[in-house]
Length: 460
View 1 (tube, rainbow, N blue to C red):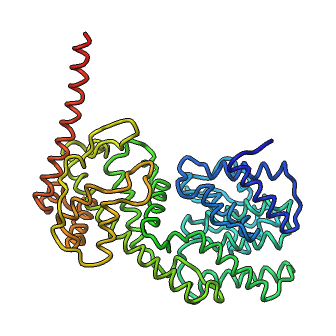
View 2: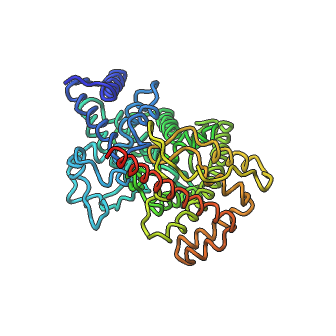
View 3: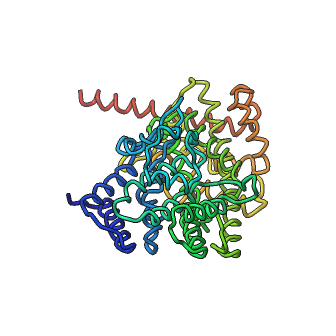
């Protein structure tokens, strides 16, 4: 079987890494593994966790990092709405579904499988454990697939190092009750694994295995510390449709879009910048680590304010849409995304280019306004990169009002106030301008349909 493109790139990475590690290479079997990896990463809802992501995370220097990255996102239950059929059979001996949750089988049901028990020891997962999508479920199952796939080619000690890298990619873990970080706990477990399985690692070698795991894990989330907040928002916009599958439908509703914004804004409000990146024994060094945390804090602040304004905007459009019905497509209110070769009217065509009514008071406000007006770096398949309606609103009401305005929007979303109550809270001229713009958009469609009718009569 001859592979091309991403599958060929994946196969080349597998072969080169295994050869560097002194392992056994079997091209036909590795071709099957490469096809499995790339097929899974091409799932219909994969927008961020794609094959390009695994190549970026693995880098090209350390073969263990390369191999760990190829497998680390293979299982992503929330995104794929389950486990890919092609890999589920390999996991069934170890995991079962109980009341819509994945659970590690009881000790009496688990097969005597060396690779499974190795991965479970690295992760500290025990028989009967309920797996959580937010506490290592995907990484654990991905590591099991990695171990079983690589078992014919590499020794157990090397597979343990790969599993450690994948374990370290479990994100956003707080300090444990014992006062240790997740990466310090991983180090403790690796010390035990080394002792129990007689791998013969020295203390220094075990520490280096953990440092490598930190490097890979930090590369996995490096976009949080992007020097350009627009790049960070681009990645945020790619993440949203992975867990909000309605956005993959061109006719997603106002409410569906709003819920995806709410979910992301809620996550960023919950996330502590200190939990994004990891550090172990000066990997990375203190100065680099502090810079990563500071840049993450800044990017999260930009994203939270940006998403807050987007939520205010969608709240106004959703409240207005209630005058028409309950599940109105966003394109009905704003016009369709413009496609090459088609000139269709959109809501922004009917909004004035308003000057800023209130002076900007910080660099943060200036940056967010630029992101709204000029746009993120990239278009996404379901959204334009700039935000003309949000720009009009924020220029009209000013940033100082956003916090109170957002609270009212959240009350509306929660059903604590009606759509009309929410609209009455908003600046009347803003609501009037937007509702007038929507009506002009409707009129443009009516005119377009009339043009078709007139052309038909002429031909007749």
